[in-house]
Length: 77
Image (cartoon, rainbow, N blue to C red; front, side, top):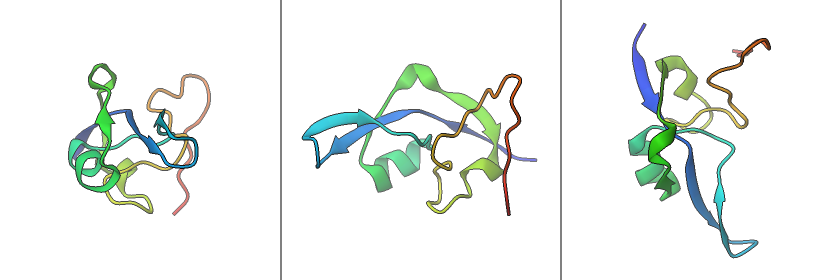
């Protein structure tokens, strides 16, 4: 299966007038083109390409954990 690199990022929260770290992860392209966010460079993780096939192309689901540890990562199709 194909792999992609995803990153945490910050974007402007219009409701609170601050920069906020998103609960999603995204590819460089999605962060730049869709979220207009600031990539947190030291957070890059390589994952299966299927994790960025959410409701927003190039972004993960909210609260995605690339290193789930003992918990299970569940994806419902």
